[in-house]
Image (cartoon, rainbow, N blue to C red; front, side, top):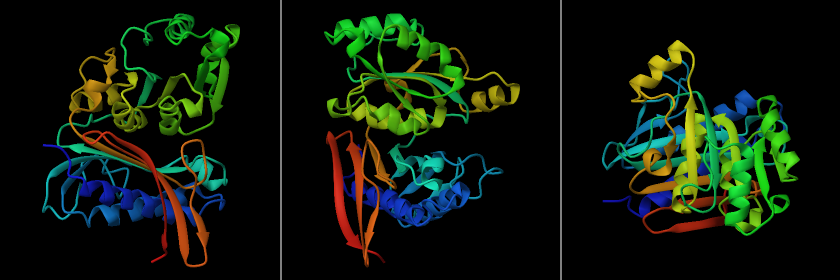
Length: 314
């Protein structure tokens, strides 16, 4: 059936309002308060929408998060059933320290079409071309780079790889450096990092490494509209995590998930800048108005654009 175009405006407003709420706390060295401002705003706006919404990726379980917890019902209940994934403030440290790249992110799909990801790590790999067999989580780093370079008619030294700058990635980074690959090391921003493969202007050929599982699902909804290739494997080792994962339907802990298994049917993705970064510019306030930029995708209409608006502060 698909998601009506009116929902593009609704969810765009949700991410913009959350970004604005968090913007007032940028540089205040309090990432918890900045996150709470975005969460509270997002929840308030979601409850105004004529839908029967359900959080499938949120701020945690009911006993861990007072708002936007997994399973929370949102909306007026007068509308279609919708699965919702949120990261009200992606890059909490970016916002707290007034650094580039903080975003407010929401992705939605029709009921049961958005993967319920556990709060655990995920090994990920993403490239721009949706073609299986070029890269794979089970290939070595060097094989992935050589395959990708051949596919793109480049040499490895002209490939740019984006990866979180973490001690756990030391071997991968060393392997990339041995091939003279150009590195884009990011300190946070797991969603935006994956999305840098979507357009040539970002000059990123491959995103790889271990990051958040929920962030992987959020990124997947936009990557799907851009017709990119994505593969992810949840890293589940603790018994309590295995129990939780099984409740979400994950039985094979070694399984590699591709886009078609993470998100199906129609979807809408919105990412509004809080502080300016690679994807979009941040909120700017002048007098009683503010300017925002939001990356929006809508699969059924093939919408992929940055919406720039100036509006009055309510």
